[in-house]
Image (cartoon, rainbow, N blue to C red; front, side, top):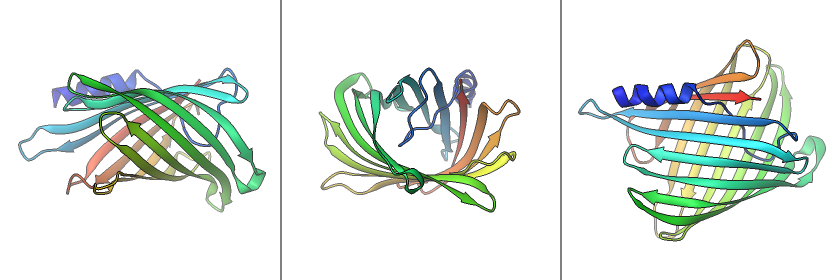
Length: 220
């Protein structure tokens, strides 16, 4: 429990971001920090921490960092650059992202490369404005395999205190089973409108129980 509290304190000192087909305006930035925890039968916690940051370096170039780490010291660090591909106005937009970094298990590390094509579209409902995002990627881990990923996100972004968010992530490699995660969440807006808390539940293929995810997004 102590280690979970430590990671929560680290999370509170960070900020948030939103990846996908949208680029950041030049000179603006986002970060997103999160922790997901599952309680094991012995009373300990299985957890995963993540940090995402992106910056609008130029009008048509967003750069950033994607970091992920699990309790058993398994994770990755990836630098990326995103550029626009096409903008169809109300029909949505496309962007492509190139990433390179390292993936590790314990003290062993290997190169990692990622190519992502993202589609995003805003929409309007009687409950407020919303968006959907679809990200398809090829992730090459040089020591392991090429993973094919498909992620879906949808949410509302009205001015009210609470807004819903749904995230589904999948990953597949030949001769392996499909990996998946599903997260229904609630976004909680802070008074300054630059900060958003995200609290949700997570289910995944590797466990039969439900975990809790807490994230902090911030814009600056």
